[in-house]
Image (cartoon, rainbow, N blue to C red; front, side, top):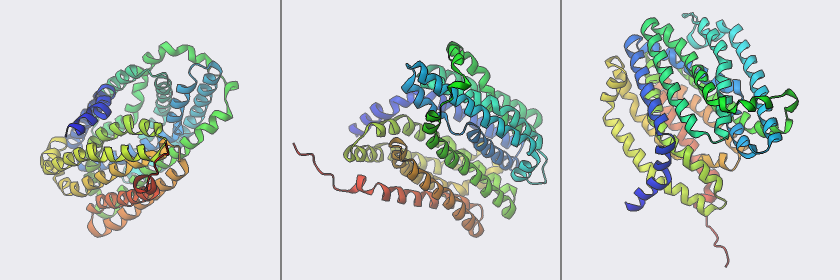
Length: 433
């Protein structure tokens, strides 16, 4: 037990508490209050519609910035003392993001009716919300560009403050719009809230305004673009394909079972998002950097099984507690109208446990830049998620969606174990003295 506590305190929770816990807590509180407002003022049907829009906004935002963020941050961190290389990185990222964002914004604005029918069906007319999204998109991209610069220069404290203030501002705007406009207000808030934070980011980036002088078309570099290519491809698969697949599953539920059932599934997904924030933050802050440092199978195996022995049991106990408290959680986060959501907890929690077990190993793909393997396995995951969900929904109703979640991540876990079987279970040869 002493080793367990020592491991958590020194390796995991210490980093989370000091770097990210305030942001996570703010996100969770904001999410719960938003969910409560939607449940009270809009209801189950509105929850389903907002779920589709949230997934679409997430996909479009990733598409607009072409997944450059992680590559941008890493490159700035490496070349921040090299003026020429820094200028090329900033210029290439800026113009890449500018042209892709403008293109996506135009496509969304002038195809708003088509997108409306895809997201909400012809029974609803929220095309104007898509046009608002198109107008807000450039501000989101600029915000991520500024975030990348601050993150690359390790300005973590400022990023933390901006994130917290942005979450609070977004929450206040969302609650106000839901209160006065109900479903219309919630939809508009979903597309503008991520962009509002740019107003705050401007204050944080002002001490880096000298970098803006380095943004030149002549400094755009094909070499920098080539370095970003793996991140772009990965973003198209993970950040775009998965949300769009979720929309397709939700639309299938609406068509086959009705919009209320889709609303229950969206509510379950929201609860899942809240508790997963904690464990994913631990993995992001500790696992990926640690895997990047490791250059042998022995240490890789030690870190994976160390996570399984310490963090995973605590996460599992937390999921068990959530399962038994689910009636109170549903009432607290939503309302009594959402009581059928309780039936979805078992398979969702089981799927999330397997998901975390799988992802902790799969992070090795990113740490070691095994991009091709990562992309193939993620495509497989997305396909299995869609196919198993559709098949099981036909048999078990909306519960089939959470069952599909479990079975798809179980297959993902088995494949990841197979890929890294020699590292995790093979014989490790001792180095000769």
